[in-house]
Image 1 (cartoon, rainbow, N blue to C red):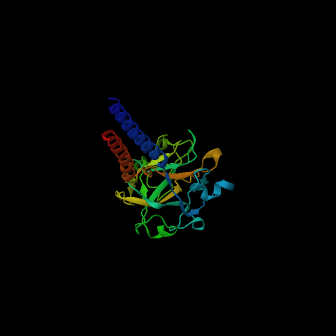
Image 2: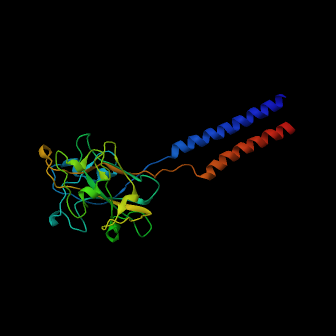
Length: 262
């Protein structure tokens, strides 16, 4: 009877330790993926300077970068390289279920500076390349008020300050609007005709201030970006590791049985 009890106890300990090890490894290998390639930064007219004019801030998840006012002035950018910020993921981000991206800006509860967001694939099948975006087609992540305010790719949007009725707090699809970050779904991507792009993944993301309106005492709107995170960019222990841990428990069980038989 004592031998059976010891066998049961050792089996429970062996499998318990395996289970504990598995949970511990899973917790330690969960990671986040952030945009890590700076493709370009073309600064518009703005009042921010100093560290807010450093585009590498958008890669380090600490400080932010200010994009400046919306502008089609050729001296501040061209159609191929418009005013704004372009970031990339060195590994393309899959279009998963639900929201795929989180863009962290610098808004307050009663003050936000909307920036529209475009995305593109890397057709070579890899991740972002510094100048690889020039051969790609960009698609707008359609904002929730798109049908009310129009397409920001063709004209600066009217926002007003105080904000007009089309810009109620809670509008989605823009960067630098929601405190705690703006969540985006790659499924929102549309072409210039408003048709769904149906992208499988993206490698590039371009953000531009959506308006050239005056913001009263605050000067002008200038979208700010702290970082871009891929929400489906987590990893856990692969199945072989879990199988190995389970196997170690079985080996322990076999050893106990041999001793008992002896």
